[in-house]
Image (cartoon, rainbow, N blue to C red; front, side, top):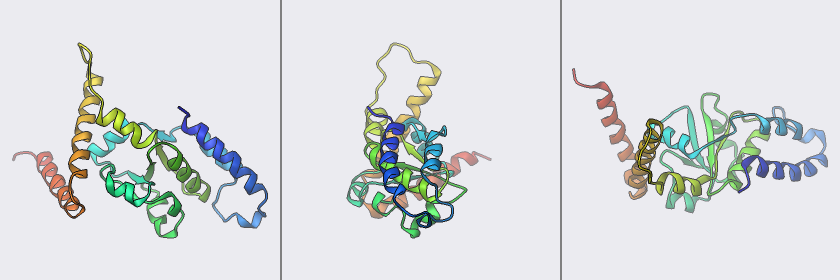
Amino acid sequence: MFSIRFQVSAILVLLAGFLILLPESRQSSGELNVHGMLEAMNESGQSLSVDQVARMVVNEDTTMLLVDVRDPDAYRAVHIPGAINIPVSDILNPDWSGYLNDPEVRPVFYSNGNTLSSEAWMLCTQKGYAGSMIMQDGMNEWYREVMESTFTGDRINAAENARFEVRYRARDFFTRMNSMPDSLKTTFLEVKRKKEAELVGGCE
């Protein structure tokens, strides 16, 4: 299985040949050239594992924004709770810049594998949108690690137990959300948040 870095590198090599032919005036202020793209690609923390994303979903981490870059039909069929849909073909539409270029929030792109999410990361990074990330191996890995994983050993340590607990909660949330009609999903999220707020408040 090719890594995200390898896939992005391959895309950048092709992009480099094209960009070399463009006049310098075509590059807008704040946009990265090929050298800047390579530097950004080599920075650590470019990708998140599905377990990290599952933890974000369970904790409703507002510092991250999940962005499903698949086509709208695929998104409507099934998506990770809390994700918004911005197809990669529309990723540079100025209407989305408020989501993708918000210094308070880091976009996390995902698709079925790595190809579309890597392309989205590349386009946004080249545009000058800082801090975007990729969910490693996309929905395929989400199904393998979150939806289908089971423990088969005799013993489980505390770290493994915590990981499986997060996976179970993310799996349950994912299943319930995607089994509902679209009209009920917003109401479900509001009720869920209200119940969790009451639990956090505790008894007086």
